[in-house]
Length: 46
Image 1 (spheres, helix red, strand yellow):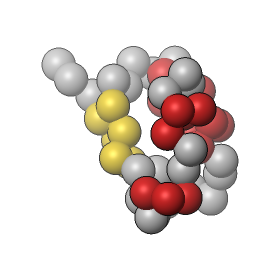
Image 2: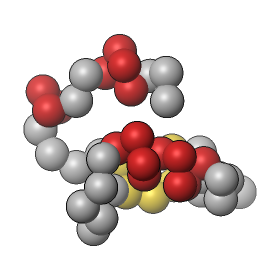
Image 3: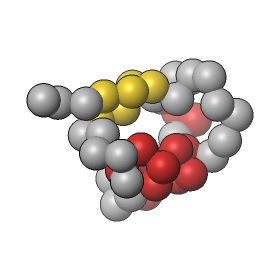
């Protein structure tokens, strides 16, 4: 089963969210906000 979540309800840095969901087996995330808000090359390494 593919698990996914979003980061809309927690006021935490994206890196913190990614580390937290990874340990629970989530495979993808829907990111809120404006795309320009995130440095995609840096996030691809998380």
